[in-house]
Image (cartoon, rainbow, N blue to C red; front, top):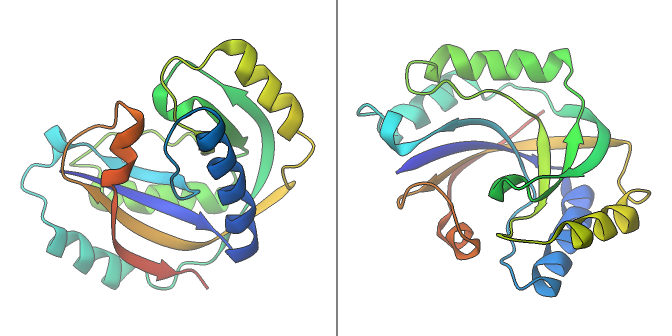
Length: 180
């Protein structure tokens, strides 16, 4: 089992990004997923007996009064990494670093996850570079300059790392916290 902590965009922006993700998934025969920015990740091999009830207790006691996160969009980019096939790179700010550091404080013994704030638009193995560049060109002017994240979600997947398109279907949201 792995644990991911996601920041979810506010309602209207979530709808905006969901439409992009859904359209790209349909166009390139992939699977859709919830728009998110991973703030922290604990892979299965590093779990060291970490239980969901422990995580939920930590979240309840330490993360219930977090503020909404406002991030500036930096640029669209792509890579050969499955989870960064095509994505919106975000600029890091002190508010995000503070939240990341808080996760690191509580979960650093379980993972050395390094923050790289991005919002993926498609997960696709072997998507060709020409198509990635074409999509960036189409989408670049549409992405909002500021993206507001108003929810924090605990996501689990009990089958290990995601490596193929259908693996995203196994994600389960366990807890959602509204950011104030």
